[in-house]
Amino acid sequence: MSDIIYVSKDTLEQMKEELHRMKAIDRPAAARAIAEAREKGDLKENAEYDAAKESQGILEARIKKLEGDLANARILEEGDIDTSKVSILTKVTLTNLTTKKQLTYKIVSEKEADLKAGKISVTSPIGKGLIGKARGEVAEVQVPAGLMKFKIEEITV
Image 1 (cartoon, rainbow, N blue to C red):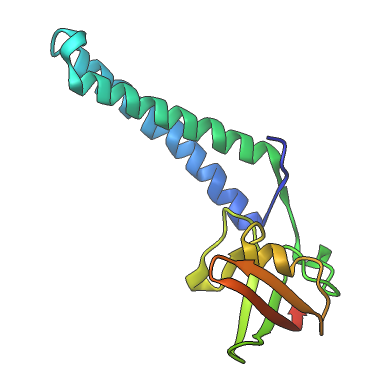
Image 2 (image 1 turned 45 degrees about the horizontal axis):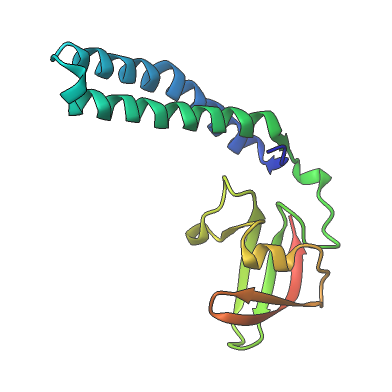
């Protein structure tokens, strides 16, 4: 799982804050919930204890994943981005050749993806299909609904 994750400085800070919250607030709360459930009697028949232990296990898995993501995170500055081709953190204006609609997306990491905000993941089908394409090229993207064709109109930061 040594996949490098490219993120903006803001996203890296959000990830660090989330990890701190999980360790400083959520982890002690999970331990308290287990202790309270343990006091309620026989552990073999204590559903509350089982639920608290399961919740703690899920939290620990999330902490471990976030720690791994932080270890593999690399900050990309806008000045470092080459706009001759579509890459992560570029803003791409494209035309859907079927509907003739023009769309603008910012290509971001999975952590930052938010379709409503016009941010698509570099690992999404459209993101993968656009990466490496230059202005004027047509990207053919296989999506669950079928094959879509997009013409790259503009690439900016």
